[in-house]
Picture 1 (cartoon, rainbow over the protein chains, first blue to last red):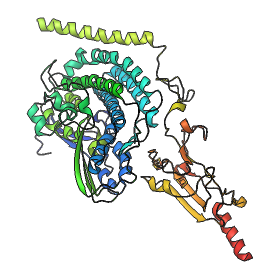
Picture 2: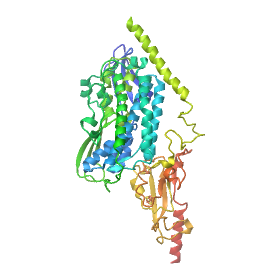
Picture 3: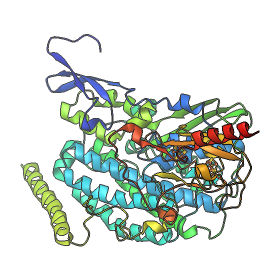
Picture 4: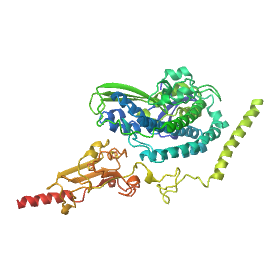
Amino acid sequence: MGVVHGQEMVLNIGPQHPATHGVLRLQVKTDGEVISEITPYLGYLHRCFEKHCENVTYEQVIPFTDRCDYLASMTMNFGYVVAVEKLMDIKVNDRVQHIRVIMAELQRIASHLLATGVFGLDLGAFTPFLHMLRDRERIIDLFEMTCGARLLYNYMWVGGLSHDLPKGFVEATLNFLDYFEPKIDEFENLLGHNKIFVERTADIGIMPAEVAINFGVTGPNLRASGVNWDLRKDDPYSIYDKFDFNVPVGQGIKGTVGDSWDRFYVRLQEIRESVKIVRQAIDQLPKDGDVHQSMPKKIRPPKGSIYSRTESPRGDLGYYIESDGSDTPSRLKMRSPAFTALGVLDEIAGGWLMSDVLAILGSLDIVLGEIDR
Amino acid sequence: MKRYFTDIYESVSSILGGMGITLMHLIKARNDNVTLQYPEEKWPRPERNIGFDHNSYNVIRSRLHVDMDDCIGCLKCERACPVDCIKIVTEKAPVRGEDLKEIKHKGITSNGTRKALVVTRFDIDMSECCYCNLCTYPCPEECIFMTGGPNAKKHPIDYEFSEPDRSDLIYRFAKKGAKEGLAEMNAKQEAEA
Ligand code: SF4
Ligand code: SF4
């Protein structure tokens, strides 16, 4: 924070603050109500993930990836196992691939439900939040049925899954989707078209496409700026090339392309697309196939390194793994999508009012567990 | 001027729309309330939400339980744990596969394995455990498991563990007095010899 002039004031938001989505401290320089500079201070949730991974075996890393982005643990597992499988050159069978996609997309729905609900909550809309949490709860129940855990799953393993689907999972999921699809429209009407919400978000915190690309912002935040970039389409991993889905991009329906409302709306549209993918994956789910079939007895990747990226609900999630041929990684680095999203905050929130900063922060959907690792 | 009135119209209509949805839920609320009245109603309630009984789960994550009569002390679970919250100490049994009545040690597991070791310490610190379930898979005797769910036959579900002191969360599974008993027996044997 540079020189503070006569009329300016330095204000701390957080670290303990309900609107900072975790333990984040924002130091803001304000002139009256107008923000001129924001400096985020990180590290309150640092748990030495990367260093820790050097001391545990490859399979023991998976519970730690769960705890990075605790709102989308399935996709965190997914990214990691895809990376290790690439490193070891393992091909997993079709049933495993389909189950993984079903889980990842259900997780995306759950994560976006929370993101949009909490975004409304940040702006004072309490009811939509309850609706969204109620439906997220059902997805979590589905996960609980499958792997016993509600948030931190340790479900996807290198070369397979910890368990096959339980009896009745497919019916329960289809039931849920039938129940859930009309609810998406309800959410849209309840929150998205609410005049107060639109006034608070449309044209606020505009992120132009160049800024988003320069800062390395990915995921729904980038797509809301009108850039059509989704790793599931543009660099397909697993079996995403088999499914038919659209990539929603921001169109500036209520204001300008790349404003906070667009970021909200892209997430809502992505929920619809994920529902489509889950339905297709369930349709194509092969009846047979052992989920433990290609699991190696001992995970000892050959010497070498790999960078692999997947699309988590927050964006481009990358794992860089360096192996020295032993059963523990010699270096593991995670590229966190929420970190870059937080980096752009100063750029897009400068010049807005104090109350808008929380709206912009909420629209970026950051998870501090993943930023600090 | 026109904008002023459209703004008013939009505000009123969108708020009324939202209120309408809330009202619909109020009318329908009786059948699909989702809140559990916790101390009176407890979690594994079969008809809850998606209608699944916890007995039909694949796996469950709750408190760990070890069936000491079956444990052979192979340390596989200790090695699998990523947070090292399982602590096992074993001692050689005087005779392989024989019951030791003094310390209630069973010589043969229910799978028919003859034990060569006596487990004198088996502590799991449930306050450190991250419920990853990694320890339960490698166990050759399937004697370490999480309670309830598919294991309900072996041990009823148990997931409420508030304790006045943190050290009460360290569950000690080894038979009480196993260490002292074994030392005594060895001393007696030596004296006899
Ligand atoms: S569940 Fe995981 S953390 Fe807990 S004792 Fe077993 S291996 Fe260790
Ligand atoms: S893996 Fe099973 S048999 Fe081996 S020490 Fe652990 S509980 Fe006992």
